[in-house]
Amino acid sequence: MSLFLLRGLQHRSRQRGVALAVAMILLLVVTLVGLAAVSGTLMQQKMSANFYDRQTAFQSTEAAMRQAALAIQATTTAAPAGFYDCSTPAGSSTAANSCLSNPFVDTNVPSSNITTVATTAYNAGNMVASKPQYIVQYMGNFPTPVPPVKQTSHTSYGGSSAKPTADFYRVTARSGDPTVIGGRAYVVLQSVFRN
Image (cartoon, rainbow, N blue to C red):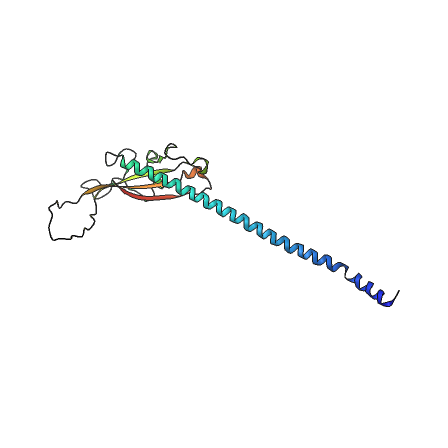
């Protein structure tokens, strides 16, 4: 054999393990990139599931608010049964009942005042963990604000100086019973209605 050929064989024998090492490093890098992509995809999937659950709970709570508004419109008395009375009696300076801003945590509010929305009024099926609920608090009868009217002429029209009054109600609605919904989304909304 020639000396040139012998040197080429010796040179190749020293490089045999380098290709394997480079292939292993590239395989490790590709695996890490793949794991990072899978981890990101799983995180996005969890985020979209949580967003979906939150939106479903919000819509359920809005349905409870609508049902409470319908119950208020159907009342014939100021503080009917099923509504918690937070009004101040005539001639008194304190309210009949102390009313917290969140009546669901108020121990004075009887459980009979918590109204669960019937399935016939709102049915979200299996999308929600519990049926929505609401509490209506009667706040009292107050003068209603009269919107300012811009007069175009100087003619004075007759009328009573007494301001009109209306009954005011505070409605607090929630997406469901927290003891039932577990780790699902929980939404509480509150609004004031005038009847």
